[in-house]
Length: 320
Image 1: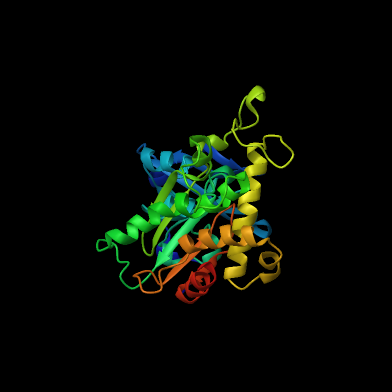
Image 2: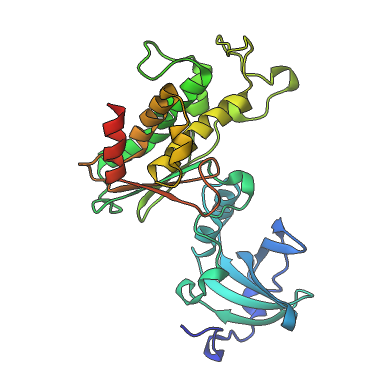
């Protein structure tokens, strides 16, 4: 790969294409505009992303892409990542002075860029848009346009069915084998809304339910007919954190990264966790060979846990 771009990629009369590249709407700012929309000389919408700050040359390198109003709306609502929007149209590398005057512009293609010049695949525009749970399914038969219906069904049910066990345990309503349906308020805690789909390998991301949103001061606690051990109704944050703590302990154990925390759980807690892992691991004889888990409530940014069919067999042997 030739980098930086050669002179044969230089755009003559760049202002005729990109205009002055002045911010129309700044979407992310840190000591200056990092991601912003602009208008080309002909009025087309552009998205600019600060890829490099070359202090020695007092230059800013922006990746500039043609976008649509719809794609910017998807970006703002977490339906598309920054990279997805940035690489969906024509792409240029614009070198600007610290005074935001265009110095040079190059035609560029995504595959020509060094990896560290683009945002990570799953980076959202703002931190609060980061999915709390991201599930990526992998397998030989997971081909766009030929996706088995059973795979889609399993993926869409993961959020509710996988979280049901640990959240019901955290709420003290018993294990999933209990008779009866949980109150609607409880189901809202683990019935995660779908945020976005992505293909390649099949991926589905989930955001926080509406029930997690901050409530007025007088309704800070979730109204439940269940009391905790102290006879007081637990608050929403307490319930959620306990459930996620259990799930994280199980995922770390299943991936072989921390077996001590899982071993320290009570037998009832372990059963609840195993029931959740049963829904988060691939069927040993199914089309899915591996399920990859990430998200703000599961791991640190950039950390992905891989649960394969061998792990699934271990979970199933302990669950019975």
